[in-house]
Length: 380
Ligand code: PMP
Ligand code: GLN
Image 1: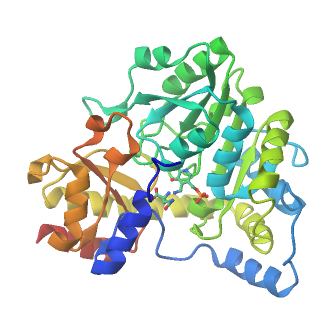
Image 2: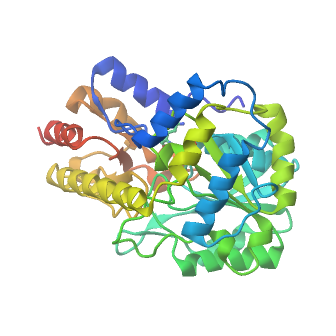
Image 3: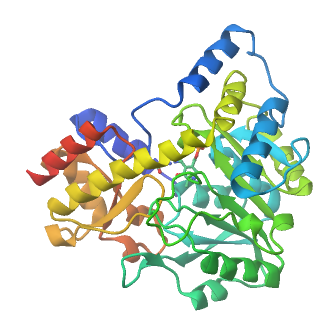
């Protein structure tokens, strides 16, 4: 783990705290999630749900996770054997990779990638094989199918796919997913999908969200991961989950026993309440975030940045070259002092750092007045 320093999120949030800058770096909302969920957590806490829950999570939450997957993605899961609750998506990702990979196995992933991927792959002694996403002619991030094919080989063990994608805001289309699925079938490898932004796809995206697990031949080889943090604006609760075939879920749980064992007893029933909220909660959540995206994109464009399209997540990336910037890390380290705003350089999420040197990421999961203040500062 020696090469892994402090995460960029911690570094940039500390910089925001120190300088009083508006923090559009680390992705966390500045308002609370649904009141029904918060009330249920308070009730569970007062009602004695304060000891170790079962390893796989409490039955009521596992049932709610299965019902949610059926309702939104038409995926049928057995709550007793095909669902596991984890300490956020982060633990699910780590446990899945540790469970599936032997030292020397290769993991195909798309870069830029969420920072825990490289660390979890390293913990397993596995090797990452990144495929680079680059803005295409429309500004939408794309990959070269030949580069994807070339990343597969005899040592490939799994594909780690994040869609909707952090930090680019890309939503993989059905055709793109089919390319991935085809190679998984051809090389007979597993897939782990990080779908924490499953409810944050905007109507102008090139495609709606489709879980890779639902494609032909994928259900039996895919662990699908999500989290309450994003969908219910409770990133500090760290309640995540994984669903998939029983053999993969039980392999993952064997690892989880020794990472955290269990987590979040009084929060688990509350997340079950949230997952069972009516469709109107989910559509309202997406629409609210779209307004914020549009507000920030307009503001950043007026401030002189070239903003790339964000189809989903709560992030947008921008090109700093029109403002004379060349290196995103340098730019983001200076931005709080220069403008009173914190953003995150995307180059730290690449192995081929040149591909992202001039790009920075802003989070728009903030109150409209906070976004307006950030934009006012950037314009000045
Ligand atoms: N994957 C991605 C792509 C994320 O953006 C995040 C959260 N920032 C996570 C995983 C981690 O989720 P959790 O907080 O539930 O561990
Ligand atoms: N997922 C959040 C982001 O991308 C931050 C998570 C973290 O701080 N580790 O901003």
